[in-house]
Length: 202
Image 1 (tube, helix red, strand yellow):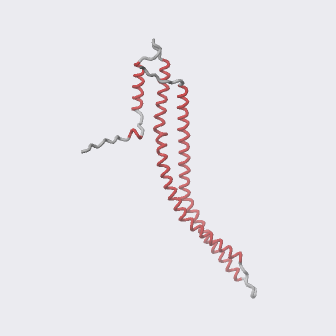
Image 2 (cartoon, rainbow, N blue to C red; image 1 turned 135 degrees about the vertical axis):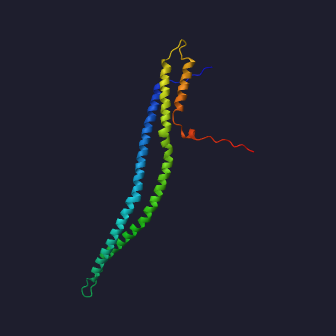
Image 3 (cartoon, helix red, strand yellow; image 1 turned 180 degrees about the horizontal axis):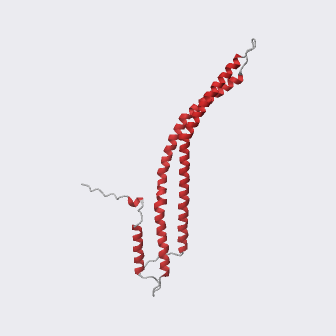
């Protein structure tokens, strides 16, 4: 008993192919944006932050030195038995010292964050590689099959015979063309994997 494809709308296939292309373009854009953001983060942690905190520590050292000078000058200002409290100068020195301690703690923190971010970046690239392969190999393969299908369906609709349908040679020709097209396309990763030959038991 003969079998026939239940295709009700070639336009639906065209719309599906257009949706696949839109997905491919959007996915490529997302991957590009994510890759750019990842590079910016790694640069920020590897180059920008270490230099920033180095400058901050240098500034804190100058602030501490200035605060000590001001505190010394304040304590030297005596009027008889009166000794100034120098509360503001003491607070300035303590604030500069706390800022110095905070800046020094950021150096190892930035190093740790840089290592962790680089590790997560490698993990992301490993996972994203599967999507990249689908975008650059699997989807073009799918689009080629869809384009071939649309073309052959259009040809099928145009062929007429006395019985009102294409003869067997038409389908044999289509099958041969499809096999030749698939043979000339890059294989997917799953197809490229060599089959594991069973080992014989002795």
